[in-house]
Length: 169
Image (cartoon, rainbow, N blue to C red; front, top):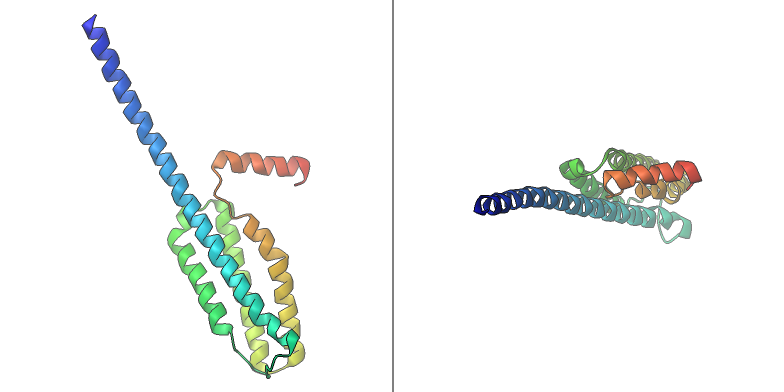
């Protein structure tokens, strides 16, 4: 009858609108999470690259004297950009990603301050030691932490962690 047709039409229309709304919300949330993750990873890699370039200069000799700060401002600006973007958009990252970004930022700041202080003192041995420590952190821990910054949906992250625990990857 006509009542059944109209009822079916209205019911189908309402269920389509409601489900479409939630699908669209989920898609937008995923896009924002992905954009935030990509930007945070990009800023972290820029900070790593700038920091590596700054600390590797003493190894080459290259005309640097004791207490040479050339490059410290560029590294600080990259770390500040990462921190500012993270503070504004941290709600879009999951807990593991947030913790990893905080550890990246803290590690960069720790090694920056240690190397800057060594440059200030003018002790070449200390300067080389802090540069070596920072380089080891940048090539080992930084990479591991950056790998944890992911934009995967919760169910993919859950299965990924489970897979890594079971198969050691």
